Amino acid sequence: EEQLVESGGGLVQPGGSLRLSCVASGLTFSDQEMNWVRQAPGKGLEWISYIGSFSRTTIYVADSVKGRFNISRDNAQNSVFLQMNDLRVEDTALYYCATLREGYHFFDLWGQGTLVTVSS
Amino acid sequence: SYVLTQPPSVSVAPGQTARITCGGVNIGTKSVHWYQQRPGQAPAVVVFDDSDRPSGIPERVSGSNSGNTATLTISGVDAGDEAAYYCLVWDTTTDHWVFGGGTKLTVL
Image (cartoon, rainbow over all chains, first blue to last red; front, side, top):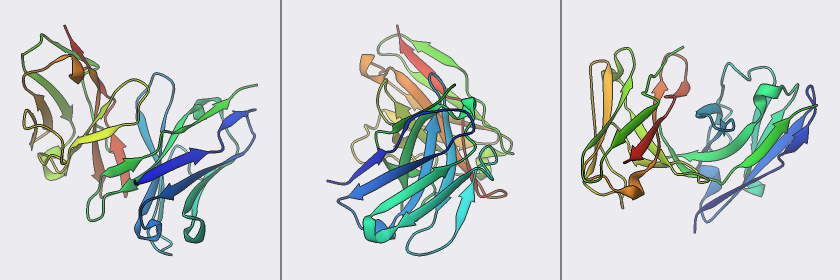
């Protein structure tokens, strides 16, 4: 069964940092283009960042987190990461990782998310 | 940046047809994807590339896209269709993905 499992969320103070992880199983991870999408409590979906497949260095980052969040991947660990720095209260959200359907521009397989709470 | 506009809520009686719109400048030139999200669950695609359905999605769920409006249509609505629905496009000018604000479908 194809599956994505996120971890690393938690409570952090404003200005702090967190590193989220997403581990894939049941699929060829290195072939997957990976994304992070977040959802603030009671709000809609917001795409955050994309990283290309294999060892491609193509990375896209939403303007709302540019300069603060960094996406990376380790194909040997079947994992994608999101390093989040200088966190703000408005970054509080459930963070999902998701694959991009090959040859298309929509998010296919999603994890169940990891909750990040930024509060003093 | 590209903006997608959805109505916050749509209400229909059981058995009727729900239409959820997604507005954007010349959205008809883009591929639109639709997601269903039930409470406590991750989103799941119900329509991709304007009008294609993934396996397992019934024919009563359909999509269209023209001009400045894309539409998700669900016919024969039942309680199981109650959920939030989001449209999504990839903006080629910025290489960013954009979601609409979401529409809460209520079955009366």
